[in-house]
Structure formats: structure tokens, C-alpha cells
Length: 268
Image 1 (cartoon, rainbow, N blue to C red):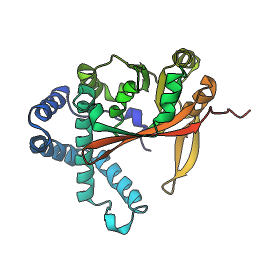
Image 2: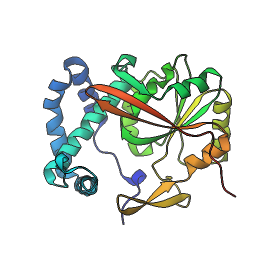
Image 3: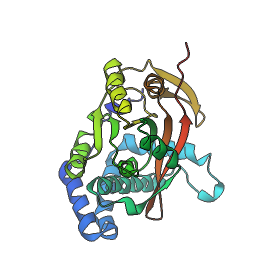
Image 4: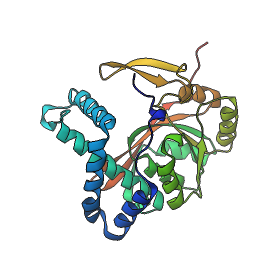
């Protein structure tokens, strides 16, 4: 039986992440790669669970890509997958440390979000674990200072988040620790929405404590569980709902906003 994502222990130590970030800040990404490959190689060789999960994922993805991409579930592609993941971790640290700024980011579809912010309307944003979500902390620069509340579960990655918090500028960013969405959480977030703030929640991970509030759907030719909580929350908060994700394009980042609905409706 596969483990739930929150039960997988993180690997690595804080000093290693500190060291990699310092190398990046002082010497740039090219020099960083010299230090990165030995670390990734060790992790890839000794993390058999992660290696197999990577190969399974790439094998499934390959069925949806044009033949020219040439991605398979081979060991070589799995290793490159780990390298790419490590580079994304450094990008996350760079985003929180302020190295990645407004000048490095393009926005697509943010006008509708700005309109809500400027009239004092709070917004719920559904995000996903794709690209570099940490760059989205720059949403706080949407025309005027606006507080961005991000719901996070950090138990599974306490060491990494400890590093992030040391380098982060949290002036307009509020991290809210949650393990499940309950009445107390909804009341807290309602206050945030009423104050015209943004609430961000990832909508692609199942709850930590319970697997009851999920919906099964076909994903990459296999049944997968998706959380109901973010959509129930949208109905409770009675506010506009947007989707958001961030991708990297040739050393620049692009944050995409898409209107999802005026507010989600909970069926009786």
C-alpha cells in the first residue's frame, strides 16, 4: 500500500540547503550545478521509493506527450527528473530570499484579480503543485499592498520550511498552518476575505487527517483522489474563485490566473 504524501519523511539537512543557497547567491547557477550533481546523485541512488515513483510518473506522462519529446520512464530520465526537482528547490529559496523579484515575473490574466482587490473584494485562489509556487508570493505587489494568506501543511517538510522562513520577507505574506479545513479554519478565512485579502490553497492534495472528503476521478488512466475541501471552502466564503499556477520560461517566471467561478455552489 502506498504511503500518504504527508507520511513521507523529508530527506536532507538544513545546513546543506543553506550551503546550496549561499553558492547560488554568491556564484550563480552555473557554479551551483557543480555542487548540485553530487548531492542529487547520492539522493537518487539511495532513495529507491522516490526513484520508482519518478519512473512511474514519467512513464505515464510520456503517453500524453508528442513523440518528439522522447521522455520515458528510464533510469536516465528519472535522474534528470531529480536534477530538475533540485533546481526548483533552489528557485524556491531564491524566490523567498528576494533574489527573484517583480522584474523577473510576467502575469497572465491578473487584471480580474486586481479589479477585485481594488474594490476591496477578497478572493480565493486555487493553486496546484506545479512550477514554482513560491514565486507567487509576489502577488502582494498587485498594484497596491495586499495581504496574501497561504494555507500550508509543513509537517512533512519542516526543515525546508525552516530555511524558507529564515530568508523570507513576510511583510504581506501570512502562512496559515492547517492539517484540515474545519469550522474554525473557515471562520478565520472568512475574516480574511471580508478584509479584502487573498486566500491561496493548493487544491490537488488530499487531506492529511482524513481520506473521507475526497472525490475519485480518472487521472492519467488511473483512479486518483482529489480533495473536496478547497471547493467546499469556496462555497462557504462566498467570494470569487480563481485558479493560479507559475511556470518558468527561459529564466523568467509567468504567473497564470484563470477565473474559476463567481463562487462555488455546494449541492444539497
